[in-house]
Image 1 (cartoon, helix red, strand yellow):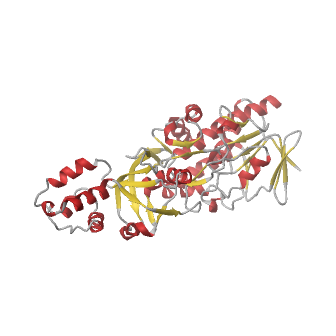
Image 2: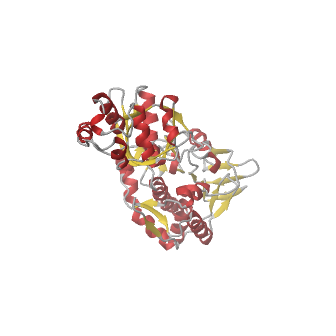
Image 3: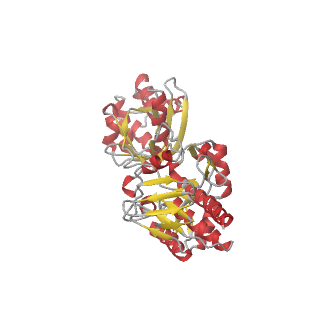
Amino acid sequence: MEQADVVIVGAGAAGLMTAIWTARSCAQNGTSARVVLVDGAKKIGAKILVAGGGRCNVTHEKVLPKDYAGGSRNTIKKVLKAWSARDTIEFFAELGVELKEEDTGKMFPVTDSSKTVLNALLNECNRLGVEIVYPWRVKSIEKTDDGFVVRSDEDEIVTARVVMATGGLALPKSGSDGLGYGFVKSLGHRVTERVLPALVPIITSSESGWITELSGIAARVSIEVHSGSGKRLVSFTNDLLCTHFGLSGPAALDVSRWYFDAKLDDPKAKLVINWLGDGSFDDLDAKLLEIGKQSIGVYLRGMIPDRLGKMLCKRCGIDPASPGHGIMREQRRALVHMLVACEVVVAGNRGFTFAEVTAGGVPLDEIQVSTMQSRVCDGLWILGEILDVDGRIGGFNFQWAWANGHIAGKSIAKSIAQSV
């Protein structure tokens, strides 16, 4: 029966960061420790490798609590304050990974390769003597008087400390199959009633089938969730991509978790798009009245993609070649409505298979966020995507993972030092 000072379950971003900071901190305080990182996947770091289209959006130049959903923003603020985006940039620079900032504020490695990020983390684990064991699929975690017994089908490890960094349900091919939820429940924790795909592409219904006819069209829009009573619940301005199934791109991904969560409470909740990105009904209506002999199609071409403009005209029974002064009032107002407050009827989403992150998980009030240690089970740390926190697109979820891992690693090292 093997023994370890800590067993970290899950070799994703949060798990790797925890292993590194546990080993670093133990070395700094002169404590010898066996840090074992186990993962059930045949290839570790899959989520890091596919992130950002294979470039890995490591963090964002500005990270705020409002960029996250799930747990209380005040609690999230404490975690982000303990490890900032600047800390992440400096940490990776120390590992030899230089990051660059793009116009959107997203931070990528200058190599534009996620392999650069993963290799740097693995090399640092190797330098520090972290043992990474894979594929080693955890089957059970048993709490004992002295700690835990972590078992696979063939082996078991006795340890005083366990870290749950298993991820959620998003992108299951990466190893995030939701098994961690069962483990934390067996150790006394709750999981939110709702566990939903977030940052997930949206499937439009047949009623909005015209969206799919625009497959390949991209536009910078404002996309909102409205309650059944018409109240605006949330709004995002970003790039939207029309696809063969519906909507994707940053705007659709950002709004997705809010829409599907709202829909569970309010079946009449709506998804509304302003194809121009901004502007009110009255302002645009007044502008259309002023274009005179200019054709509607030409006018719209200056603001939105030509195919999109023609489709919206078609939906309103307007010939795009018609001059502005030749359009009936009802048609003009219908077009304005389609441009600034276009309701899109949603059939569903592409599920966890295509989601980038999971919404829901272990409530933050069950975690001491100053250490990421469980309030429920001694010797247990819980962090990363398995917690009830999810960020918008742009490196925010990775920043949450790096921050969690740093806090947990230092806390675990302190616990190990105190036990010597």
